Image 1 (spheres, each protein chain N blue to C red):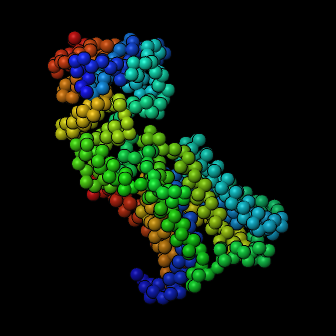
Image 2: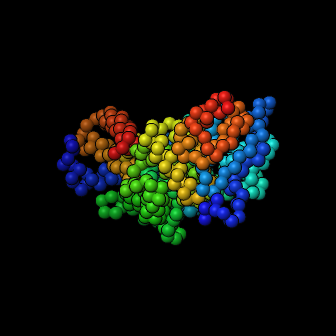
Image 3: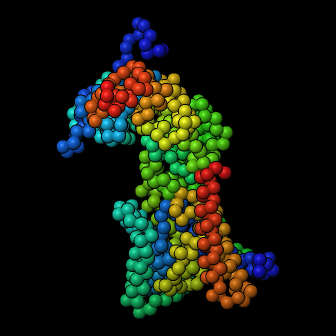
Length: 301
Length: 253
């Protein structure tokens, strides 16, 4: 490891965790959705939309904070529902459907915030009445790390438990591994998929809230590229692109690798452009490795 | 207990097809065919490709409704509305694709869609211990000893997979077991394993319909033989030789 020393220091480790947490919160449900055989490329846009909704409603329209949070959650859930419904109904590849939603939602977010306020960046959330109530939940620090890190761990544990220990988890594996066989066995494949599309969207809204609370504001472009990073984190963590296999804990590891590479490059002073090179290489290596593991699992031991 | 015991009242066949005809537009896929499946007996349905075997399976498993004729369950006419309806009435069909998920473990596959749960409220969870032990037991009563039911199904042999599908159907209460060409893609040893499964199913009292185009496999496992040729009943026999069956299938009978 090039940057061994800085990682061993407390501050370095905290920086890695803080950088990885938002991505990790997205990557856990994204991994579940991928195991069920679908992609969601719209979560980055949903993240931007949820954050902007929160700021627009509180700052521009003067809504109370709780109502704005609820409304942003509903909008995000609605986007997830629309994605899921379109994918299940049209049987088009979710890659294409959510690529469409990604553009539509991002376009709407930028256009509406410009139309309403003339700007694409809004701030002032931290002075909104009621902010003190949500600050400990969304923007507090737990020692050296942000509260987001705790949420990341909790949500990953919950996702892993859901996947391994519940009926729904069994259905997730089956929906992605062999949808026809799953349907024949009575698994409500469509319901499983729609639920997971809603879950990824809600996770995106939650990350939007965490970041808006931390920074006191948001940008209509926030979340751009996060959809791909979440997929990369899941794949690095062992989730198959083709579905049917993977884990939430793996996605946590993937997000951690992301944070380490990112912070490692920051700490060692290497030009950040190399970040993408390392990332792309890691991704291809992970896909090859996953495929090898899958063939091994199917061929014996 | 044995169905043929003297003095015992003769039970009607568990499942019967009565003068069934199936037309698709102008094409007659099945023409006035009758057959019966009885408790603890293996009925073999033989025929070349296109003889009407698939149509019989589709009717008995609730996929198709016959254009004419009836399906009788325990002697009473029944309308099988869907495969799910048929399954609920104890008619299980094991297709060649087996409805198994290769990357999932044996026990997860065994209980897929019918998972037992334990705990309450948000802690309601899979009863994994029960799944493991019950799937292991169910397989062992079928003569398959599988210590490690955590293995992915994809890692098993074709015969073992077929056995899991059969054991699963019986475990969930199937009285009628329809097997669609279970030995078609298998080698000699694997086919033998599947034919043993058929015997186990019969011993447990299931009415088995073994659909095949291999007369040797049929004779090895079957009690009754129904031969179809171009949608028509060519023969119903209680015993036969390989040459006789092959001849009937080809149209020399």
